[in-house]
Length: 284
Image 1 (cartoon, rainbow, N blue to C red):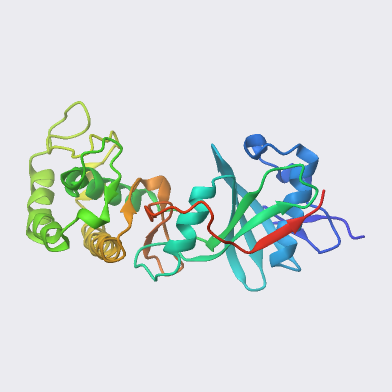
Image 2 (cartoon, rainbow, N blue to C red):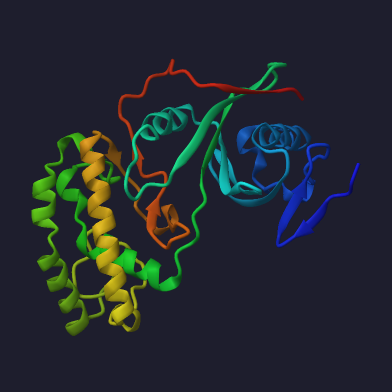
């Protein structure tokens, strides 16, 4: 058995080796596995998809973990979650090619055949790069100063129902002339206020949107690009009757061509508990 070796912050693993425990996230227990069993489970899930791969821990949420996986076929993200509703939502959303949404390649149940652990779900998805500081600033400006999603929803958490949005009204409300008007006011009449600047912030986000960045030609060009991306995404959400939520910078990134994309932002409201998924069977 060969020794594990590292390169570029990844761990390279052959199909005869186990994943090094150094890779384990500090919050691994959000899936209620012991440390040893978590590593065995992760090992078997990855071997289902790849013979050889490099893996890097990306982060964790309340109910799952995400890893970047590098193989000869490219780089993807593996997400492990205990949320059945998330797996159901993605299973339905991925049937459509939605502009501005990350590509989801595979969704499966991870079943412990010894029945010690509850079923969790593996989601294999497109890898996105992080937005740089200027790109985050531009999207924060659009989200906070321009796109008024509250107009289409009474919910405080800004979950917007695509079945109730008139897309033509959305475009009329959020047209390019209004965007340019708000942008010019921002450039010419900046004024400090509790949440940022004098131009009203729709969602009252506290992002530090810097004038020095937003007045650059590069920022304006990027803003027009992001404007189109988001309008196209809303159009698809309305077309497929999906709900929209959480369009913050943590759920945004860019693909290999630099295009803005989102994940964990669209879902189907018709959640069915007995939905069918293919499985990855593991033994611990």
